[in-house]
Length: 80
Image (tube, one colour):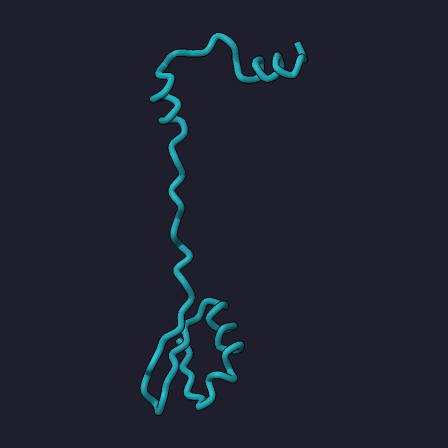
């Protein structure tokens, strides 16, 4: 973790933010006492994807359609 004791942190904001953006944490000190820690956000959160196969099975069960989706699309486009 980086430490910043500079009395004019306001003038170093862009430099400090660049350090944080690169993935490092910065500890801000006032009179050699920590007053804040700036750290990058946790980007490891994974977005849960819906289980589309389970949804389809719930809706249609095990029945198979007489015509495939490709055939339906071709018919709708007039390619048959």
